[in-house]
Length: 577
Image (cartoon, rainbow, N blue to C red; front, top):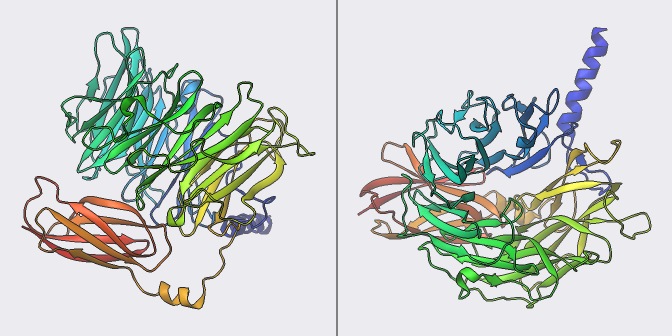
């Protein structure tokens, strides 16, 4: 009996150890073998990634959030998934949680439950090793609980603390936004929180964006007309701008739910993507870091495409290296019988750089398209993943039909880079939902979705994943050439000019690796203590030039800059005059 038990234990562990990406689109990698409600993914600096999901335990009145970490090959790194919390919930709160990866690759998870008798938010911090750093959670309300809450958003600012914002409502309030700042150690720094409220005008659906220099931007719906407002605030929760900026004033019809807006940081400011009007047209707004509008259309919004089709689900991507904006959205005719995905490239001044109608990724007549995502590719390209319904004859029908997942890579002129245009990610004859993609890392994108293969019925599918390399191939990467291998042996170099520094400096990082390699730069004091992160992002291959403005209030003296590029670290001593 003991031998049998040992055999099965070894079989299980070997299966988990060697499970990795497939090069066959019909044999994708199964990530979890449990039904779930929702999931989120976030990438870490080394190319590994978190998978967060929640599922009911003993009925829908207890929805448990779980976390697992996978490496770049899809192999789970923890022997056991982390059970974040186990508290009673209302059935619909399964949609009210959120995931963030901080500057040290910890997972910050916001969980809504009714442990206090009413809906409330609790935050947890999980290390990359799967250790709970806030084991009891942080009560974001500090004991002051509303009648209801929703729409949690969260970010980390430069000093390492975290900003949380959510909507509160009740019988005596049409809508209030409350914010809380939490230290890295898990202490609430704003007491009962900072509140945006008026007597009769609701504030709803907050979105947070890190603005640098320990400041952040808050985007929210304001008033019965659901005008979008934008505020910049400091680390004490005080307004930086004299008054809020009206971000978008177009007719949106209904509340800007999570799928309605796309809010993206850009050059210290914020991009907002939405669809509005009658019929729905795609729009983009860019509010600069000083609160002014970059586009001449201002709060009326820049229209991204001029076809007469209905637009849905705008996704924006900011290309920091080339200072451009990409947008992707879904279009349908009025009966939603014709559907397609459209992309557009926009300058930072608001000029449409591609066809006024956008570039059509794929047209389906009448096959529906759903669940699409967008990420930056190498050399300013654009990666689009999407799902298409089909039947055994290749003709589309309605819902609950087999779905395949595909991807394309667009060049900077809107051209298609891969020979077959669209690469098939998964074409197993199964119903699929919720496709999402992670940013480019280590020359690959990772996609995750729900798949109802080998499961009875159309609900309760499991999560599957697949990678696709920058050359359009699935599975293991092709080994680099001899020249590329030699180049990999050289570490990235890091220099700062001028030095000493008064107000402005330029960081030069030579990256001998691939485009998209992640980096971050942290500032340390003379004693070697890290003061905070001052910048992070992706590098292109070769020499990179990163401009830095000295924050006001940063005193003169000797400092050390720590530049982490992938798994390598360089230091530079600087003097501030």
